[in-house]
Image 1 (tube, rainbow, N blue to C red):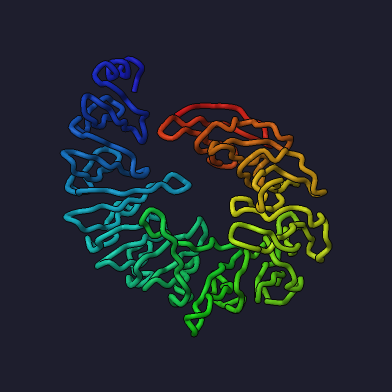
Image 2 (cartoon, rainbow, N blue to C red):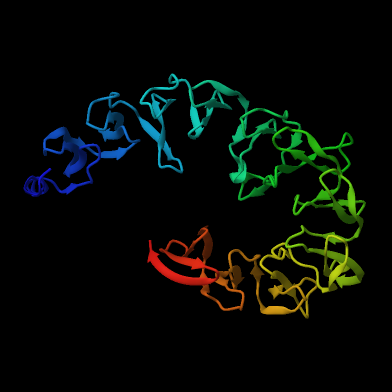
Length: 438
């Protein structure tokens, strides 16, 4: 399109988007398409037009949806009641369409992959989709074939960002591996806790190819037992014989049996004897463990008092047993040379939280209510129900004034007040720069 023709065209429309394949989306009250000669090849009658993929677009008119080619030719009627879509990492769009309460999948080759046969689309993916029919869920592949039978109450697809999925049936859980193959029946416990009347799944995320699960014992009066399952094969790597268990971390797993804790490897061999009263995951080569140090006279009576120290993988004490028990909000794991640790002069729990170094010295003062292990040079801290970030010197590089702060990705932070705008910060090695608000 020549500059003269382009400027003439601009005067005719409210907006003109960038040209792709010789065509551009324009707006004149409503949306339409023009070609590179300025000819309106799709009348401006649509409420919405957005890219579906490099070959086609989605249009909306009178609360109905349809799909057209990049040049405006009709691919489907504008007759669908709803759409759901997802962009993958390469910005390709995958879409589900609904007609009269039934769903189908429309793929990137501009064709219907399935009949309108599903009551629900629970997940859309470039390779597989979780679908529901008559209250049961399964998985179909990219060409519409059934990959996992529709017989489960729920499927947690790619659970917690992993490549595996969890299936749930009758309040028990099973495993679907990264190739969408069912590798275990729903033989494992489905634990729940209640939050404001809603049930939330209490599953652990897979770690290093394994997932920690639980089973009921034959005697219902006995507590549940912990074990570990290999995600890809469904093989029980660690038998279900422990009273509690940590993650598979740095080659070791902490386990508890008969009120004593120690460490095993993935072959279930005891590496550090079960002699501690408290144990935590290994991180940066160290793990926080606890030894009983008498009793504490609490309101409820005498309770065991522990002292917390750190050991290495050879069971050498690296940091002496000198700290109080840690509350559930403090995870005493070393990362980037620092670990959150709480102390208190008047409470059983170490409630005043800061960061210690590998010598056990506080290098960031214990002035916070909560603190999380460091990530890329930053530690997330909380004081008086407000959140912020500190760097390794203890400087509050993001002030502790926000209701919610989080790592948006590897180089971006998001910080916001409830119901307010979000401030984004770029960061690298603890250095912060505010870049935009939203």
